[in-house]
Length: 275
Image 1 (cartoon, rainbow, N blue to C red):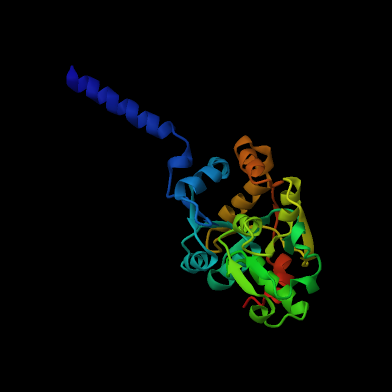
Image 2: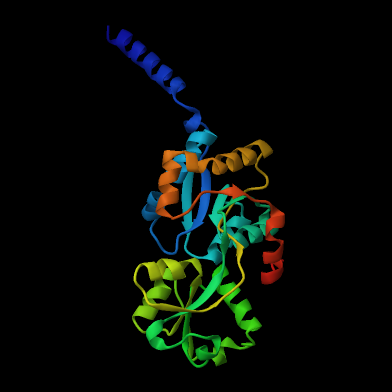
């Protein structure tokens, strides 16, 4: 009797496994992002809606993995650690050059660098910045690189001498905190944050804004089968129609995705001299 029950129990287990969706088949896709020092648990929670949606559509689990900075991310991308990536456009293009990654979708709109200061500092024009303390996000961040391009355009050839001091923060929140605490006079961040911060009640002057470049971009490994790359792209274009993906987009204040191709980044390549 015991052997019979064991036999039927094993049969039921095998049938339940066979009936499971293909999500459990194969190894997980690794989605690479910049974590800015957040824990693995925090990153997994932030991206849970997107990974759940992609897992359903692609019939394969998707696991997010954060890199603390852009340099570390680039090294991992060069080793083709990530199957997918969602990062600044310059990072995707650098990964294209080093390991063949391809952009397949991007957030609509543009990213631009903005130089800002609290209104109480009376810093309102580029000429007011000389001799002041300035703070950027990470040294290897795209927005920081764009900032130095803008400084060159303004005739500031040697920022270290032009400013009283320069500081670098893990993320844009650090830049805002630096201004609030009086640690820096000028903060450099994504121009979109100017509106976000002023809407929250910050009295900030916009000193100078650079030219826009493509927004956050989703890339895939170029050596994945074309059918898989296409499936990822199609899934992202429909992301705003799915509840799980909607939760992710709403949390990050993103409208959705639009198609992307390498030629969209030609001007950015020239601006940052990406080899």
